[in-house]
Figure 1: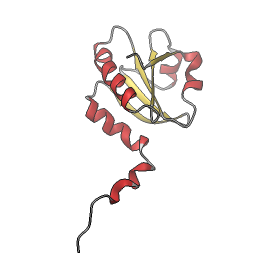
Figure 2 (figure 1 turned 60 degrees about the horizontal axis):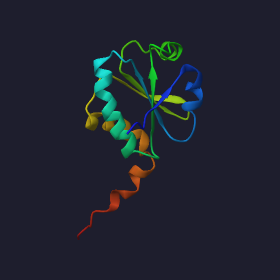
Figure 3 (figure 1 turned 90 degrees about the horizontal axis):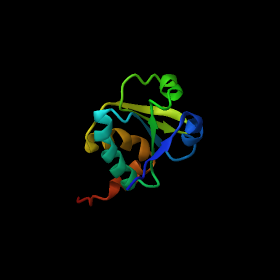
Amino acid sequence: MGQLAQITDAAFKTEIQGETPVLVDFWAEWCGPCRMVGPVLEQIAVEQTGKLKIVKLNVDENQDTPMQFGVTGIPTMILFKGGEAVERIVGFMPKPQLLGRLRPHLESEAATQPTESAPTTA
């Protein structure tokens, strides 16, 4: 579906600002694990619309930002909240594990509300 925007070093700081958490996928065309994680990120982007923004930064074409954040292996995904890095994931990870790492940052307020749905008996 093409939900993932390609960003550049020049646009990076603007893209990671805001209320919505932003997952930046540092990748390269030649990277096999990067190609494996791409469809997983596409699915998550669709499922988490409004809760999470996912963007891709090609490390071959944009070298300043990866160097600034110490990205030495790809794929590396860094989650930003309010412009600050809060989670770093290196390498391919299946969707359930990847979501498990992201969820605590996406549902911080909502996670405490719906827990009282189980009926209680005396």
